[in-house]
Image (cartoon, rainbow, N blue to C red; front, side, top):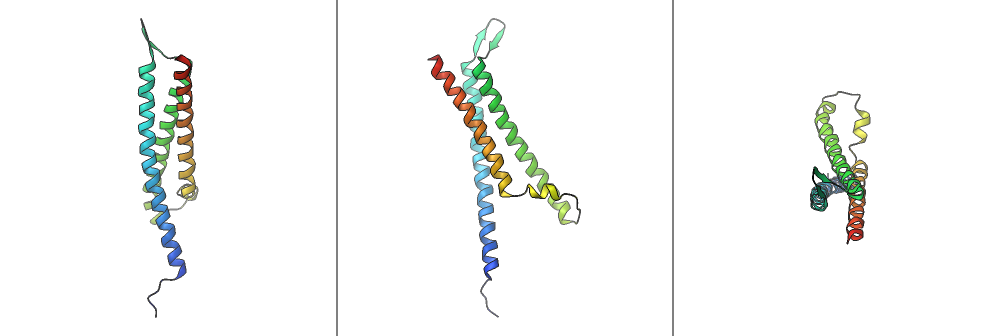
Length: 137
């Protein structure tokens, strides 16, 4: 008997390492995206126009607000799916079946798609916000 690990064990260890790295990176980027969304909403609040009966937003600011809120909703959806998956991993481990579709979401590809959606909507909202600021100056 040898004490060396098989090549399959080494590959699995490397996959586990990259999966943990992807999860940690996604978590940090998610925190950054949330902070940028809240910062963008604060900037929109500063740029609003006060009228006699309340406040009004210019059309580009409404678009930017909708995109920022969409980004936050995507973030909540992503978190909810992974919370649900974590809860159902226990049920899957206990032998319950019928959750095969949801098991497919427990992959790095799903995380990457959700992260790309969050970054795309965040970038679009800041482009619209920047366009509005430049246009009004």
